[in-house]
Length: 125
Ligand SMILES: [Fe+2]
Image 1 (spheres, rainbow, N blue to C red):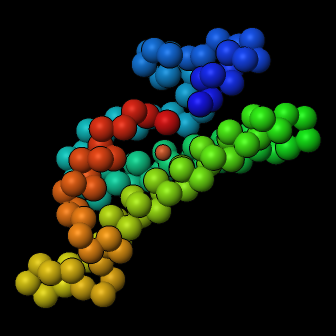
Image 2 (image 1 turned 60 degrees about the vertical axis):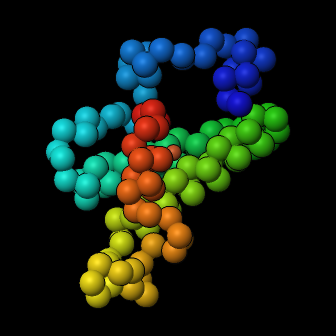
């Protein structure tokens, strides 16, 4: 979505992982600590950084580029969802006998392991 817009505006998208690390606005914390809590905290930090970057882009494009503004707004909504999902996993507290209690993850049918798999395969922000 954003790549297409960059090309429309005459720019060159950053497409290789090496360049992602070079040009990232958010940095990248290597997940070298095996504890899930630490990895979740690192990912939440990454999502929050991405949200900040997209909020700045919204301000920049608000009056000058409505097409880019709408694209960035859609991406920002997705990043906010990512942060909420990760925060839900971080806040997860099992109920008695490992069952989910009233403060458990809102998606009752979703196993925490499958949630973990879906976010761990994402590329850095
Ligand atoms: Fe994200």
